Amino acid sequence: MTMKRRQFMRNTMAAAAVSGLAGPSILRGAGREKIRFAQIGCGGRGKEHFGLWRNETFVAAVDTNRKVIDMFNANTFPDLKRYTDFREMYAQHMDELDAVIVATPDHTHYAAAMPALAAGKAVYCEKPLAWSMDECFALARMAEKKKVATQMGNQGNGQQGWRDCYSMVKGGLIGDVKEVHTWTNRPIWPQGRQRPDWTDPVPADLDWDSWIGPGTMVPYVDNWRVEMKGFSGNRVYTPRAWRGWYDFGCGALGDMACHTMNAMFRIMKPEFDCTIEPIEVIDETDVTFPAKEVMKWSFARKGDCPGFDNYWYDGHLKPDKPEDMGEHGLPGQGSMFVGAAGTLIVGGDYNSWQTLYKKGEKIEKPEFEPLLPRAEGNIYSNFMRAVKGETAWDDTVSNFMYSGKMAAIFNMATVCQQVGEKIAFSSKSMKFDNAQANKLMGRTPRAGWADAYKHIG
Image (cartoon, rainbow, N blue to C red; front, side, top):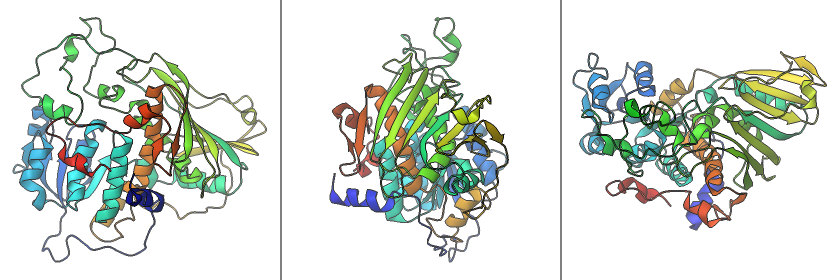
């Protein structure tokens, strides 16, 4: 680890500092009124992004499914350039772009986002920011270096919910917090299974090599044949089932933690110094995340972090209720701040509602003094204001300095789960105290995909 990287981690990978000054506009002096986008990943979330920014200009679009890319907004943008490989798209159109939207599976987030970021383009990337810790660090460093607008897609960070939670906790409604628990109904795709032992022909409309990207090449398997073969679940890799495989996803935690643990991250301000341990792991395999798990971080007292234990539960597992809740039950998914003088339950994927419990009494609308300005707009308008120079480049609520740190810390648990024992991480070395864990911080990309990885420190 070089001094430059260590210094960056100390100085920049914290909650984003807002300069309060508008930044340079990429439109000013260019004779244009619209942002020129490239869309990478056009199904699912990709469709939603086009709907959000359809009044801008879309220069190019990329999707590994030829049917999807052929249909993608064909009526609105008949001249849109369409590709199945984003490397080819960049080679042809990088100079024509102002911003890029990345809505691909986790394992290609970094390879899709880094070329644009390194070229000084604004980037909006879906959560989790990247598949590995090293990828998260590299994207954060490059965003700081290029000083361009970035945003990770955890929508709740632009909403009011976590701000109310902040005011309640920091305002002392529940006293000192020593534990935070978060649980989810994910995974809603199969996990805890072995890889199929057969291969199917790749459909003519699918660019499987580009779908695999920098990841590990595996044979294509047709979803229609899984039941005939007695394979668990009705999907193998696509759609969405890729989240459960170590090679391609970050499990249930990667899907939801950037949403549901955002309030914890904003309020408790965890730093890199911590231990991580697997409390409970059910139905694990060497190729997929387990069907259920409980993971624990113990964050050291440092800077603005008071020192506390943080727990994650998935597969419908939940924490035990504290005495403050009395006979009241826990919601299906949510977070719980356990304080010395009460318990705050935070519900919804985006920390949108709060219920206070004290000595068995339920207080649904607790009174508190707002300690932060109210949310304005959403993460999309927040991003576009920065892209257009109406606000500072780092005045985005989930810029890559903030979200890079967040996603890296959450990815510590995916590393720990694979190691299978308690490990510790140090901000001094930016490494674990475990050789296997350190290897799992990143990956060696496949041949042909190494160019973006030259930025990994």
